[in-house]
Length: 106
Image 1 (cartoon, rainbow, N blue to C red):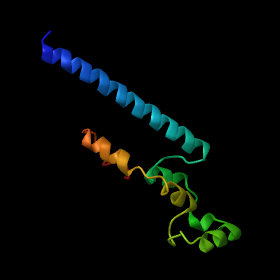
Image 2 (image 1 turned 60 degrees about the vertical axis):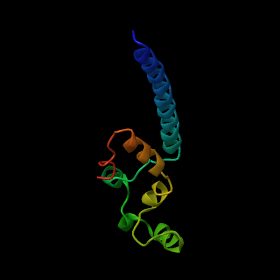
Image 3 (image 1 turned 180 degrees about the vertical axis):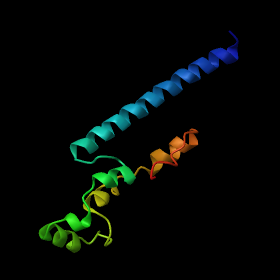
């Protein structure tokens, strides 16, 4: 085995360790989101199907939402919660690594 191949094996081992760390961290983030009652870390067409529409909110829930200074007038309570999760750094690094996240918000 050449020096280059041996060096690459060391680098590949380090890369694999970091990818595993990232997977473990994402697994933990998903667990925390699940405990908080979030169906996803990003809001997509699939999570919107699980979300109750604004018309389905009872009068008290609708009033509370309208009093919320962060409400944009359209977002559901679930979307507002998921929007507080910032996945931009993760998505950026995934794209830099060559994986596509273009379908995340379909």
